[in-house]
View 1 (cartoon, rainbow, N blue to C red):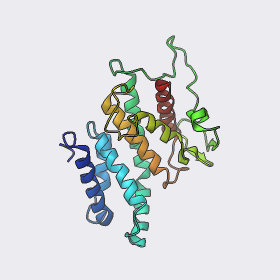
View 2: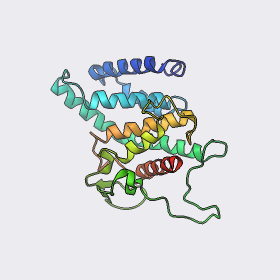
View 3: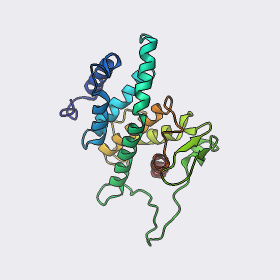
View 4: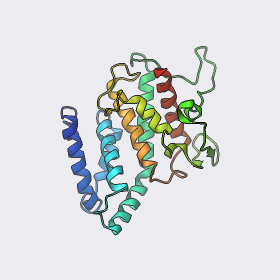
Length: 241
């Protein structure tokens, strides 16, 4: 599937991914031990990022919040298994978003260049403010408080805006999607990113948005991840203005 996914129609690809996740719902990890390993490998491999993120999104939807036909004991097992994979998953998504952002900043990447933390004269400048303070995202309720400080520190949340309707992630992913709410596979021709990069970025943000509804935020969301999410939200909003 990973070799031929580009040629497959989106509905076929999504059906196959759904089938794989349905198998994992009953067989992972006992008889399908490499299910999640394969997802992370695809996310980290060039050319299969979108497929891996699609599978991650469907896995989050189907396994972290399973339907009523899943036994209670199996639900608890799936929740525990997915929770163990969160740190690696957050690291993989962070890497993907950073790579897309770097591709956008590189010469010849197409579209408007991303806002840098350095000015044209080489002097350091202050990064753009969080989009959470903009009118589109409310008045900034839900403060993000640092639990330790430093570039690699984890962040503690109180009433996190990342989980609320109209959140940062929803805002950024909406802006990356085609007008009218179409899927990320239908990239806009006027996007600040190339079509492939736009699809990957939108899927990564959608994965974060869903995973943040069930995962433990205080121990798994780093300042590095928040920084790259803020950049996407701010810069896509700037492109649309």
